[in-house]
Length: 370
Image 1 (cartoon, rainbow, N blue to C red):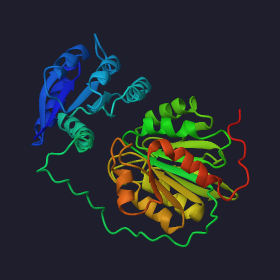
Image 2 (image 1 turned 180 degrees about the vertical axis):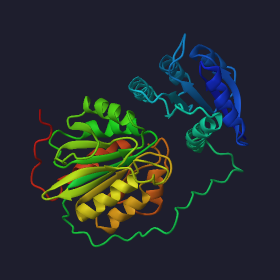
Image 3 (image 1 turned 90 degrees about the vertical axis):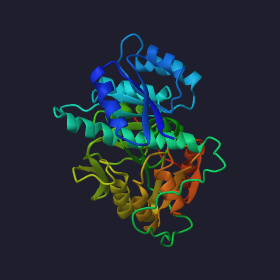
């Protein structure tokens, strides 16, 4: 059965663009369209809908107000926000995610060729529709005649065996990779880390420019630790959290006795920039047995090869479990490849990270200053 989509946007041009993209796909069906949230809520009461695409800025009832009314009535319905690449759009998108939106895509800007605009929307939207619908369908009771779909295989073999790891290996850095569902996952995980957390935390969250800065600011206001966007050149300090800037890869480099962040524009990996694999590889090379990698909710398999590198260097890897993930793509690949030391629910990860970091050191150093 085709995935039934309701398209909600006040722009006739955008509604036609999204509808055209979706109707080209044999497994997707547009069952309706709406120019504002009020009309959308009425249609949700009349139609069978599997996924909603929802504009943020609309007259009468905008996307945020729509979400506030939609979620109590349809708690499991996947909702993908349409946003703009602006500070206002980023802030509104993060607020939408906190209200229960499943994911977001950004509207194509500066593309005067309709073919380019179609391709941009298609590349962003279709994988999300399929992944979120698949996650929602997988958690519902399956029909007796429908066998579970096989998990996609990673590209090439994965080396599972780590090098020998000392029993009292001391963790000197925590590195995190996350994508779909990430802002909410980070908003739960990071505030649970105490102000006395003794090592730096370096994160790749798949997000475009501007969005990562707004995410860092938002998390900084909620965490005991200082959270900042890493644009390259930052010296890593204990008890600080660094989020890779959107649109650029982030790696770590040793300079004398310090470790600094390096941002660069190498080609995307796993169709991502920043890519988790880029960061994880650099962490593995610098820290070896002193690295702890955490792979959280997200589509695709970015982080798989990086987790492999960390395990081969003797580091440790944790993965979020399927039940607490919005999409069990990234952590699922790591778990199925047997690269994870533990696969845990999101609400237990902060405690487990703290336990592993505390091993091998007497007492934590002060966290946030200023």
